[in-house]
Image 1 (cartoon, one colour):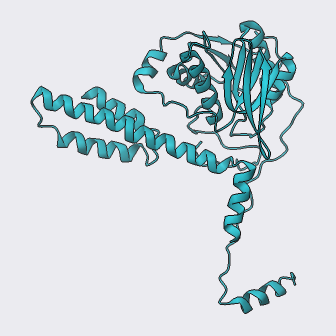
Image 2 (cartoon, chains in turn cyan, blue; image 1 turned 180 degrees about the vertical axis):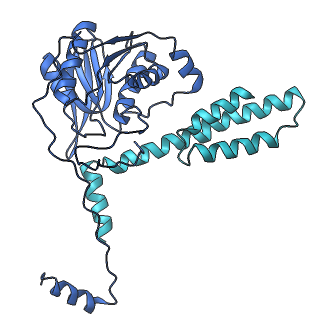
Image 3 (tube, one colour; image 1 turned 180 degrees about the horizontal axis):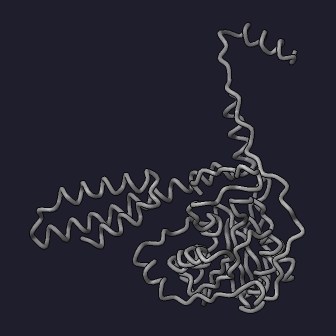
Length: 88
Length: 236
């Protein structure tokens, strides 16, 4: 569980909404689950957390970076298309 | 890449104090391509190279977390011009003798787009810049390049210099376990003097300024007002 929290915080440093937002949300979720006692429930919660990091957080980070880079470094055709859109 | 850029008050450059540095996005794509080639058993080893102050080693660790086998850190605290970077990389390439050097097409701090091309010329190697697809065969490298008006496909004899464009691939994210594993991978540190390269430059930055702020647009009530404003501005 501690390892999961560490992972969330480390990935949170790159998260678009900022590390403080991630820390707040993470603390809330971890505290919501603090009373889990069966090994099965705990393992499932940790697995859900890891999947969340992989499928939601990292995906959001990579998507944001790709979109920003694509916007900044347009290919000549994309530039022409974008200009046409603003004209009409 | 997401840091707000501020010009220094004396206009000699950009303020880099307390700025969080990270790998150049185009170079991330280059590292990813190299690691993919190793995953596909087309390459036997991936070596990541960086030039910069002590903190640059963090970027090297990210490259190794992505899959590079070892790192080379050329320690230099001064800001360098593309030609100097190319000369340093040439010295490393002559030492390491790789079949291929992969770089990002340009750095997002100066957007020079020169290092890869200069490196290829200095080494006398073939080059494939703005690569959007790289296919390796036993004898050659097929590179699809993004050019004005479309794409161009080249067949390069190795050794070759390839620079990565945005659409080459989607770089993997270096996860915490991989970052921890990367701490054990070897990093060789050296200075420009060790490589016999002088970091003197003939270029001097005269001034750096922010782009002019956009003027606010004005709303007009109807076409007549628009025409009147256009005429008043002198465009009739």
